[in-house]
Image (cartoon, rainbow, N blue to C red; front, side):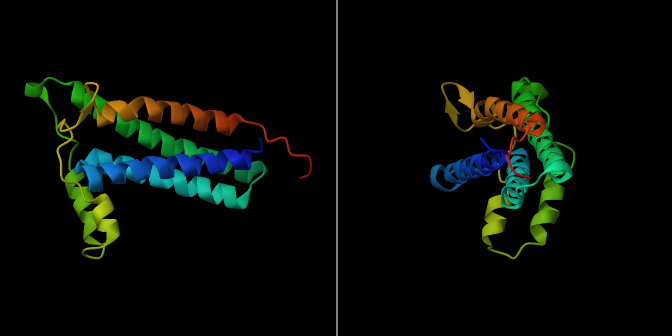
Length: 169
């Protein structure tokens, strides 16, 4: 399979994850916390890089550059997921906040968006990171997303090292 098809898979995966997050926000009524919003931003970055790589169909240095950008986005997503699961694992009396000033940083980001815009809805946080308002089989949303993000990161690293065997260059 050509590497271009793998880039398309990256785009579709990010689209599926983003759509699922929106479903749980708009239909189920789960408010995202600041870490959830950062997770969305990381997935949006990965999806956009994957889309550019798919459209560009790069070779050589450009292919490696896209790979590095995908891994950087994957590391960001993985870091957010690790922090979120760690926060949920803390005892209630030791629970830490989402992070120093994350809410302020997000509020500044949202302040530049047009009021009432779709973008504001996508990136507005309204819950605390240690809040477990929804579970499936005893696992919270971040705990369910964590293994998926790990597998996706492994896939991105594999994609970086994959050789593209095209007949014509």
